[in-house]
Image 1 (cartoon, rainbow, N blue to C red):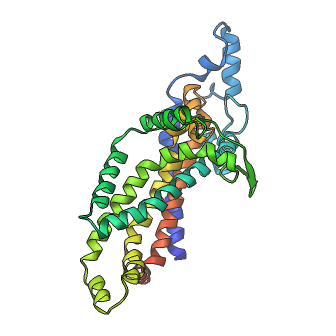
Image 2: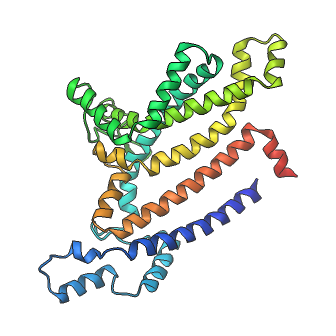
Image 3: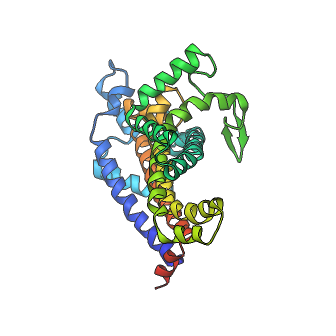
Length: 324
């Protein structure tokens, strides 16, 4: 296991280097932040002074080498707009995005697993058909349209939940979280539901497919032939085996929820990392965008590592293959 983790960490370094190369040159060759940050009536001397202050007067290769040297020590540049380290600006918004992603995945998993399990065990029943039809809508409906519809129904028409923003927070492990406060949870529900809809549909369909496939295998038939209660057959034998592919999907989808919650955060004015990066793109705040993308790649690699470790816990064959 140690050799496997070290190998993955080495691969992570290579991936991060390639990502830094692509992202840096892709962003730093597009637009000129001086045009946005400096008064349009400023003369060339003031523009040159601003470019020097931002480090944009150096050749692009030298800028990249300086960026790499800073990245090794955790310094990914200073925000052009906020005048502070880019990573500090992002980490300030991280708790809002993380709690929203956690709540969305909790909704998707809590509802998706039992619904998919039911649809797989009783595929010909009308509730199962209704569940699968609903999952198609979850895949098909655009996120921005669903978000606007949720605001119209639950915030405007019914007045049950706030339409946007982030409510009161409670400090937990050094982070300010709103889902631990009842009023704050009300603000998080609509964006979390909007974010969870696609993931819920995915988990439902994947769970149903796995249940249908595993139910036809001999070990399930043999467990039933031994006279084991159906609850034990499903809870111990069936559920444990269908969790193996589900862990991979849930892990990757958690990363995608965190990384790509941009649309939801924009619609609901949720002050998370997604809204920050959208604002930074419009303002050409390159250090913030680069730092966000580097953090996203690191997060995906870490989640993949955790999923691989969970594989060895759920499936002993993975440990045997590694031992060989």
